[in-house]
Length: 292
Image (tube, rainbow, N blue to C red; front, side, top):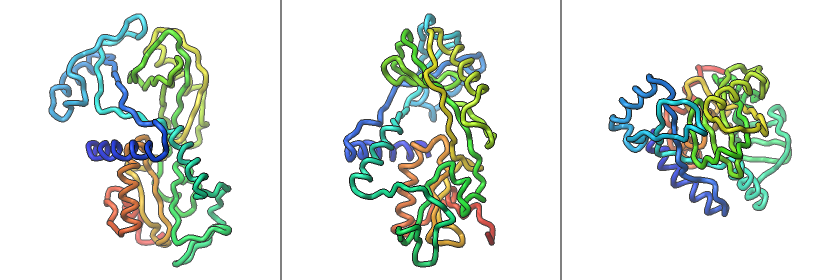
């Protein structure tokens, strides 16, 4: 669904930028390195295939050998989008506060009162509740039985004053410029749910690969980690609880959340307000047995 998802994102985010008065969505240049003869062969085959036209650059690019590590070559990747998620989330949060549309309090699933007509939590009463908890779904007693596989990831923020890079570089992982000679590099993958958010092993992996990617000196400013809410079949999950029909989940967006949410958010709204059926590939009912 790449074409459909991208078209939806290209309509959704600029409209959101206009509503919020911010600039967070862009179309950056991305270059991917070719690090082996096998990767060169893969590129040669795919760049000639119709489905990759406009996505894989047709000619190889030579990167500055004084700045970058050894490689067989490099090429541009088209149809890339970049979203400043932190600025977007802060702006949405402020918008909700300004419009008195958000309650900021600690939520307790066990304090939730549910019946067929009403859901209540403290002095909040509503017809429905939608859980959009990301990786914290593991603590939700109503949906924790779903086959979530939390993908832990780590990245490093660096400062590299001599690099002077204004494009995204995909080599092992992604090196993204942030301005003022700062970049982030990541991220790692781990399926160990008990693993700490950041680890020495994760940092060592990142620095080892970054040292193979760039030759210029750099300083690590920050080492960060987070959990990605990935589900077993790598599809979003949305829809009503089997028992509590006024209780919904919207989750499982994983590593591609920014491209998936504009499309599936609209699908979910149309389901809630107009009873439009949910696509079977993302419907929570695909995981329900006859009883819970």
